[in-house]
Image 1 (cartoon, one colour):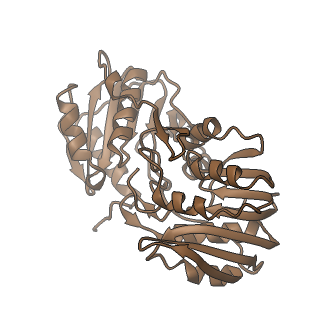
Image 2 (image 1 turned 30 degrees about the vertical axis):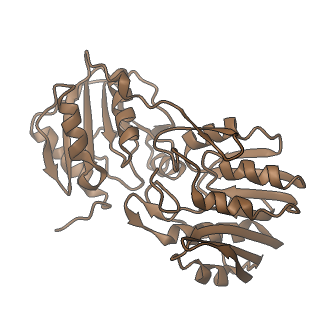
Length: 359
């Protein structure tokens, strides 16, 4: 049976292969699983000893529902650690370095070829006593003893992005647009109406650039709710957006937040998971926005020119139009949410980037 990189089974198959090849776990102690994706099979590991570590709200919720112990950041000490490699190289290095620092036993490194596992294992081989790499399900797995290993130079360091006005923003490697302001968000910021008022939300707020622009350009806003699924990005946003009108929510922005009645939503929705284009994500954001908006509410969003969001807007709003754009982006505006279009769950792994720019 052929398997795609997004199937949940390959990681479990590679773990079984590793145990057959001699990987041994300590008899007691917590086993950290760093950044697994929603729906992945971790059954080869003893569930009562596993702590899933993920900053991503949808993944965190899913593993909690499967009765795994969960944390948003590594806590240590651990008897063993499994690092589920993300696509971003700097983030992958950071996870491995943290695992090595907090683990007394083996650190297991597993990932898909499309996420760069082969290159990462080559780098590791020059730094640690790495096992033979085993291949299965379009990916590879290998492990090394953490004792005596120092990979502190791989730890991610906070960076600063500066906007055209010279305002600094704190970011971290692995976050969307960590190395600069996303051009789609910058274009949308220019279109924020000064007369925007009431209760507003930024869905998928990231590290807060667009939210800061909304608050600066619309003094009549009473509250701005920043909804972001990545706890690391939200922590940066808390430092970057200090306006007292800001409210912060660690949550899946494809799902409406209970109790919020919004006058407006402004957003730059994601449309990728890893390398795979998933415009359904942006559609889920649109439906969630419609579900939270008041009958008179409005939506303002930026999207890549080729994305067919007009269909979703037609289904969820009484009217919509394109306000502005460039060859690469379009600014869409919608009014009058239709209550017959409730938000649907988005079945997906974690989001890595929004408008096509690498994180």
